[in-house]
Length: 627
Image (cartoon, rainbow, N blue to C red; front, side, top):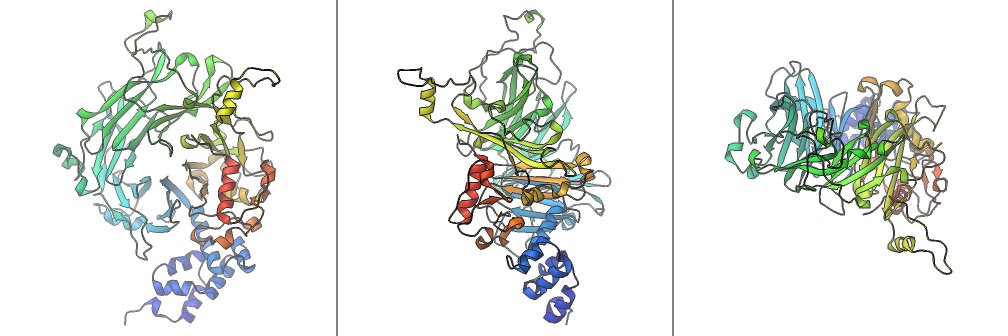
């Protein structure tokens, strides 16, 4: 009979297991059903927890019977996995992270809460090369259940791989499915990937235009044989089967995704936008425009590319821009599926002495805003303009098009602004009319080894119509003087800027800042963040990306992530272990990280169950706006 560990009696498994670490036991019980059954036995879980992590929070909660030892074992393992992350990507409710052991962890946080793992060492078998013992893996993108990775070997050859990781019914032997033949990538400068469930497009800033500057080139791959590209000539053997012709974005300036360029697939088209007017600095110019490009993803034909070089952006007389704060994205909202250009700009308005940040929204359009000319006829510099200069009249901006940050009142105990070095992550959520940042606040806990990471956010919401009418009414008999509307407020109400967690909120600060306890990390720290309208994900690691901690903060009470409960410092329950009875006891006064909501100036409340509690917390604390 073939030796098989699963055939051993429980007593022997127990003697083996009690000398193993938490990670080893969880890995062992994941190999087959019989070992999983042994691993679920309370006496073994208790022994492993008490032997391996007796002084942990999870062990204490298990002793107090707040959670089971099985849950304590899994929570410890998952916390450690999050703390070992070295890289991650996030998209459409899926977090994919990789640790130092080349294990990829996949969390489906928006829906099922399932978690899966696979080893990148197994993915090496899919590569058409023999020497794969050493190399560098990078997570590129995750979208529509497709995870894209890049492998670079010691000879600097680069290979693009894509795996289907769609969430299906849990299976012990689940493995990701390779959906494309690995593609060798030549000149992968600034590589990015955008995909749907049927098509994958990758772009690189690697071809040289006729002007001598590098330009973007986009290539497509059909993921489904039943949804190939329409034109036969698109199937170019040099780039592998089911490949499209390359689309070179000619005279499309910019080379920094998120700052000067943005790319997105939406409603059957690949979209690209640039906020640059030219590859070179133009000394005489008046108007800045967005440069927009789109083409069909099912028929990527260089001769069928739509272009608009004159979508109005701003007038240069509005003031200089601090480019280091620029953020450029393409977004849709739950209210309106149309594509919108969202740009954050920090400007010295009219050349003044103070900076102010404003978030601008411009609907994507392929009709020029107005007919441009080469010069402003009223300018003394008009005779100096050349054929590259642009001038167009300013269209009317409605309040919807711009969201000025200075209109938000600031909390009295917090700095009104944070410098760029202390702003670790920033984004604007157009659907919520809210900006959100992760900042390093040195004023929060002065005794801490490093500044505290805190969420900084504010939103706006449309003003009720009757308030707008009252503001417009003049003073009448027997009435108080009507309030005068601020020039740029329009029909919006601006919430105060909030910072979370509150000062002294021990449990919440522990979650946010555990990876930053060493003072040296405040200088050589590696930080990456991502967000959507449901959650924020960030990775904080020491110098060189070592010892990272992956944290997910969800605003969705139905998400499959950890939740705050009423267990004091215990405060966090992970994934599918988070049963309702453990989250919050019925009719318990809500607390957030040990601080009552009354200290956030919004009062304390009682809730009938955990579900309504969590949603109200988020809605009250952050006051997400609505269009």
